[in-house]
Image (cartoon, rainbow, N blue to C red):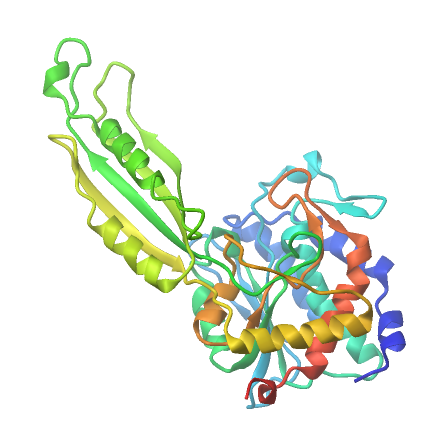
Length: 386
């Protein structure tokens, strides 16, 4: 490994702040392909300048392009996979409400914490390592995704394709709870309920109608009652659309359901429950679509071995690295872990306020977490999991 003081010196915090600012200045809501592609253009240039081979995959279905950045593209051996995304939940115009700026140790901006800061560190760690004559032990592949915040509808195939030739995966989603990383995540299932009833005048012919809203309301109460914090199972009906006018019995209603599950057994239980739903209101029919969107990320012995390596490296750098027991949020790391690839998540910047107008990263986390990524690049190999 390269000498630690030289590695630290190669990580120019001010340059990282400026680079992250360039990325944050281009707003990238998931479903604005043109906006996302403007940032992909810039990232491709930054990666090429760092001597990474760039492959661009076209987006589709309203989502932007994706990038694969490789250190040794012709090497046929197992790879170290790093997964990032550039899309955010913030709509165009959020920069006006949350301009990129520094306030003490905090660096504010839409998407700066989730996860443009971490995505930038993934590239910076490679650059810093190369600057002092170091190199990743395995061929490095950095995937830059465009649709993670929307559930990775087009990106999942690319992630799984790359995961199948990876010895391990590092996901630079933001750190949790003061710098802790993630070694286990709940799985996520998404369902849509479509209720079709019978319209009628709500005053003169109320008895002739069959309310689709009433059906969805009944399902909302029943489904949300399944939430069990002790099991790590949560159910949320997050979107409901229904009705045409206040004086018309509603003939159509639909709901979007988000369910988080701790393991595959619970996912199967939920699938059986959801596909078995029947209409309760006479005259109403019910259709259910959807299923498991992200499989659970479970902490295996191989994940524990990778975490122990990261802990040791962090201690040498000068900080204690801990993991959260499990987090309810999903990420693209769920896909790599489900394929049996040892995966560490939450390796990005520390901060808070994800998905809000208080979103910020901590400048003090840049150097230690960038150094940790570089050390992982240098040391991860398949033999550590044997």
